[in-house]
Image (cartoon, rainbow, N blue to C red; front, side, top):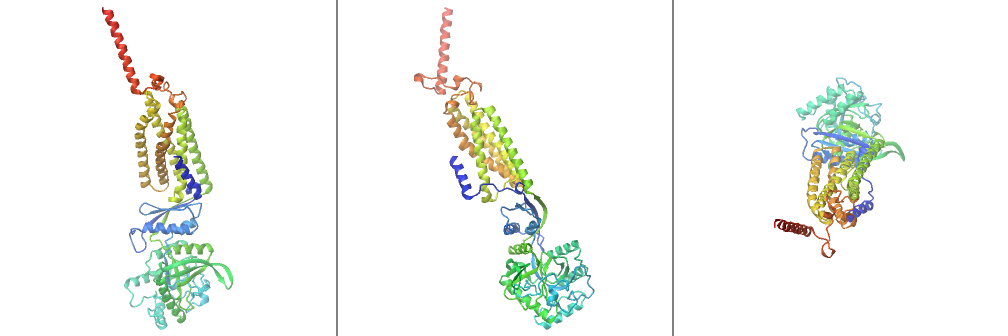
Length: 605
């Protein structure tokens, strides 16, 4: 046992882990429960999707610089995220956002509250085509505040693009683009090409009707539009708002998806040699994305130069337009782009992090969020420790009063169990992500009773053996043989209950079940490797072996006799075994009967 304790604490200090990881109810932090629903275009949750979502959420949390966070699946469609030490609703939103990124062509844009006419023009400003300046300023066009340049240069707006098939002809020639776009402008809604399917036409008409009445100045309406756009298929037309709710857009089918983004990083926007306060997100595409992006920007540049369409593409994240730059400096073929706009450093870092780890395979709704301040958590921890100290103190008083000298063995067992429990809780943190919660503290307090119950069973069986006249050494072995079966059965039931509770429960109840099961295993280890060997050694001492009145094994106090407890000396002063004492008693009884018989015969004569 000493070797085990020393090894555990040497590992603790050797690894620098000297304190257990605390859950949010003790350390303060944020807890959120996310409920999954199928991704757009599906009605079931695919096998393995929940596991993938847990992995992505964990990567997002870690990328935000949060340590000791816990992301775990609870049930078939629920994920719980616990972030100790961070009280942030924004962080929860970023972790749970689906991050569906698409690059869609801009068919039409307008001011947030503008009601479209029956013959909408491709440009919100009414100009034949948005100029470089008009696409950069929300005041002169309805596009969000984004850079007008779509070049690969850091200063340009080289955001990832979706091909404007629906604002231009499928032909890549400027003439064809101009022709098809003119037809689109003349119609009440943007018309589909002659080869488009009926479903595409229906989607286009529906989106155009929504765009005509969409009022992005209303936050409720804007949120509803974003949700509808996020749930739409990549091949659908959508009408949605920008992130600032200052403009609305009618967008065509997606040409490039966020899954083709290889990496994303946030950097400040440079103005010459000067670092500005604005930030941008730099994107690098994989081979597929590079090819699609080059094709899309080529088509949009043709639209821009021929003034046959908006020449803009929208970067749409979860149904919201992050920015919508115009491609005015040629096709982008290098596989790199930037998302620029009115991003702060925090916004840019968050967006880059979300894009880096990909979209979640499912849509998640936040069903519960709880934020605990560090002060409240500290008070709860202090209260839990106080309750444990009071419970332990009461157990100490009881065993001292009832078991007297044996109390030293009981208290030593409890101390060793406490040392093992603490070291286990500390080491299981980095090993398997265990965090001690308030419910876990309750499990530790209950464990005091479990450990006390084990040595009570052993002590009472030991006393029974002493009452039967056995020496203490013999009583220890006989009592242990009988007591250990009861101890194992009792601890097995406790461990089984803890295991079932852990498997069937969610949330903080798992913490209670885990600590209860852990301390039950530790109780078995302590009783077998510490309590029993210590009593065996104590039985060899004069204090316990001699049945001292303060030892807790005084035969007279237990209802026996001291002569029965201490074997009488035989020939040569040696102690007699129980069998020898019994034979001696039987011989003495026979001798007494023989004497009585002789006396009876003499009386009869």
